[in-house]
Length: 126
Image (tube, rainbow, N blue to C red):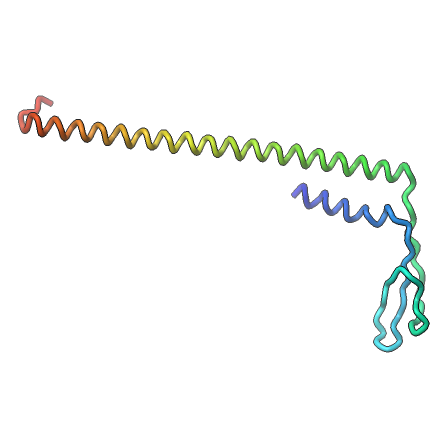
């Protein structure tokens, strides 16, 4: 989720770092609107020119700082998630080891009981 918001922020900020012109042209044959970085060709109808302003150094620094803060927050989140996953894996492994030990203990008790019955038969004192 954090990665998606960081990616969105980055993608939204990318056009702000460029100083470019965008030309809006209409194709006379299809009527389709065409957006391009160069002036309209002679066979198209110019509709307008869009100017994209360049960021001031302060705006660029603020955007860079915000991006860095987002990246640090995402890194901290991922680190926390990795630690939690490792802890869950360790707990699962311990639980499996305990269950295995319980099964071994029950098997040893059953084997001991079987040996007692074989040894004492029906005269088993318990």
